[in-house]
Amino acid sequence: MDSQFLIFVMIGIGLLAAELFYFRIARKFRIVDHPNDRSSHVRPVIRGGGIIFFISIVFWFVQSGLAWPWFAAGTLIIAVVSFFDDITSLNPLVRVLVQLCAVLLLFTQLWPIHWPGYLLLLAVVMCIGTLNAFNFMDGINGITGIYALVTLVTFGYIQIYYQPFTDISLLIIMAIAVLIFLFFNFRVRARCFAGDVGSVTIAFVLIFILLQLIHVTHNLLWPLVFLVYGTDSIVTIVLRIRRRENIFTPHRTHLFQYLSNEMKWSHRRVAILYGGVQVIFNLIVIDSLYRHEMVLPLVAALMFVLVYLVARKGVTSQIEGRIL
Image (cartoon, rainbow, N blue to C red; front, side, top):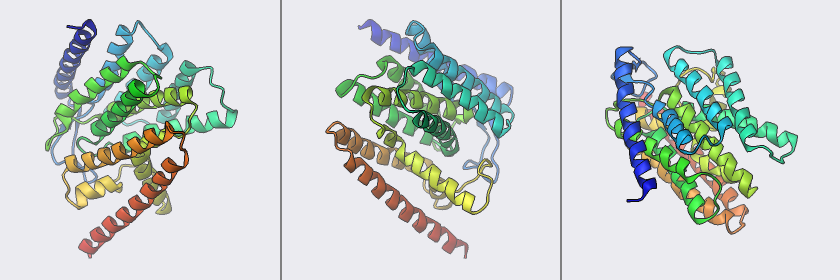
């Protein structure tokens, strides 16, 4: 049996053991998510199960021979602060400042980056926005895990068949961690939620891999592999700002929340829908960009946004009709 395969098997066993051990700690110290009027669950559930994503980075860092230390340091910072936020809510400004420091470590790891200053600044802002978008989108069973798995498989496909740009071991170990997390989360009654430590940490890792891809290929259209999450997040934020709401407070106004809470679609159905749509779009992006076709993915993205807006309008109209 291949030694590398055995290493991955051992890492998988270690990650499963670590997750089960965390469950015991979480129960003992009551690190649980109690349902409230903004929740999509009705029973207390262990919070912070996504800590397995940080542990997987520790495993990868060791087996890689301590590769990419700035990336590892950024992951540590973001995971520790996010876990603390799971236990006791932090000031949003503190979270953003920590995220800024962690993102700057990513760019330090990738340096030298020959981008103009304005583009670097825009990239930093978008990275912080993406971290928070992943956090806000973590609202129903399976959606974070399914979306992360789709993205990791997409990166793996690009790595193997088109353009080597990252460490394949990182993709495999993260995918193993996501599958273990989904075993406990992708259920009618989840045994755990990712928590901020999970959603923000997996977002941080995916952002780093995406930045590597952009850095190697010099193509700025690769962020389209986050299109589904990005569209739902940005549109929801814009609508909340128009309603003069505090965008940092919890809410249930994303489209996926309308579908699962008001329309009574199952969490797993909605999660698969979001992941499935992103898979289809990713295939279009990969095929187009490697044929040096830049217009098609942009047109496809615009069409998706329009479809999303129509779908959202239709869903909200149905909900308002039921209320009346």
